[in-house]
Length: 357
Length: 172
Image (spheres, rainbow over the protein chains, first blue to last red):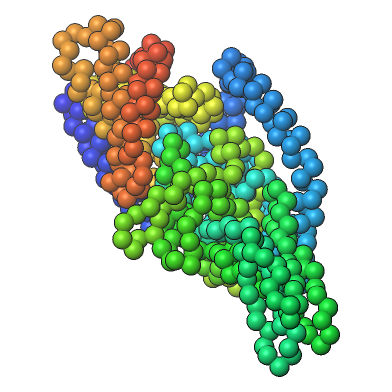
């Protein structure tokens, strides 16, 4: 009895030491630990698949009992939303195509040029202290660690572990998630007026006038009016009505404050019950006050794991800080992270991560 | 041959096989059934019950083995759950020593209490290795829901645990 007890104590010490060594190795991204995971995965997956099939009726019954009313409410809400968005979608698609054509014409990267793999969510995190999901595509589909994952609404996370036919996606709410982002502060909606002097010898002054200002200034001037047209949900477009004084060319320059100002920061997850935050935003005066509701998009760049301009969310709250420290922004993700089904993995790797053949 | 059969029929082999099923239940059924948005922790329950039935040494061993197996499918560093569950198993074994000849309800109280503690050990371990951000007030809700779920499921877990960890002589 005493021998058995001593053997067990030795086994405990051995297992504790093994655990500590494994933690150290895994935090150093050891390939031995990855190999161990793969071997265990090979043994475990068939057991898990069988259990999933056997327990499906029970989980279906559970969802039937506890989620039925929620699903009905959600269905009604979604129908209403679809009806609202149907009209805007066609115009939005045209705008997106136009923007992509413009970006392509100027040799700028667009999402349209990046291959993607569609994947289905096959499992949530089994623990309460990890914000990950599992998808049914892996290295066989070209997926690598770090690739961005999107749903129809926007960015939802990044690949953190890849196996042959499945991958683990870390959601943007996980405290370990961090990504460089841009905050696009909205321009104010104003009308600008450009006045060009008819005297060709004098350089044409460009004078911005506030909306309530009179359009008629002097008898000797020619007036060009620029109006900003605003359609709900779209970027304002500018229509210019040129004046035709002989021998005078006029240019239209919008107010500097009307241009969308961009500032970069880092988005960080804070767990499922708290919204992610964006930190390291500059407190520069030219950036102005950040409004609630302005979009947060990925920053891109040669070292970023994500291409630029993927929508992540909108600013839900601005927490001002004392001194020169910029504000901290709480972000409302556009994607519903609690209800993910089909996802798109962008097969994008930054130049710094690409392995040369 | 006899040695091989002895190993195969030992309670530790049985434990590994049962744990495979327990972990697969955790990653499938108990990941989907989330009362109040919290996943019940079946692996933790199994470890706590084994500690409360067989004492702190067996509880710690069960926790370390179960944790290592569970770690290999979690995205967190391997070894972390092992230490947390090992500690939970040992705590369950130690706690039950306070009750002389514990009856069924004392055992349930102990299981609930250690489940509550065990669910806190994990984010604590995460914080110790530098995975910050999980020590939030949400832990209180998570630990309470896990403890209640474990108390409800414990009668079944006690039966399975007793069968798994029972020492049997090999009849050749």
